[in-house]
Amino acid sequence: MAKFFKINTTTSKVVDIIEADNEYISSLDDHSLWIEYTNEHFNAPKVGWTYVINGRYFKGEQPYPSWTFNHLSLQWEPPVPYPDPAVHGITRWDEETQTWKKHYTTQEVVLGLADDDEDYMTHIGRIQE
Image (cartoon, rainbow, N blue to C red; front, side):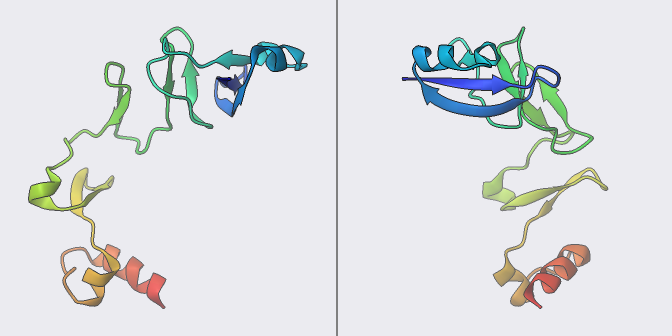
């Protein structure tokens, strides 16, 4: 069995992924919309991602307006490189300030260890209520 993905011909977005044999795909009314995923593709398809036909790769949704797509790594990249988690811990992107901010766990907020990000603490506080 092989993996096939179906694309929307208007948007080039992947709308479905299945494992099937060629005989089954050929029997479908919309068989021409199904493309076999092979090792010639540079990354794996995911539903909702755009299929770039001439590049033979899949492109996920842009996570933030400031991020740009790197056609060599096939990844969205922030304008500021991701900080080393061993040094900075887990971080999250803040689009408004174009910076990485520490991502606090719920436990850190409850223990009062998250004091440098009032908006985030307010958000976590609302979740706990």
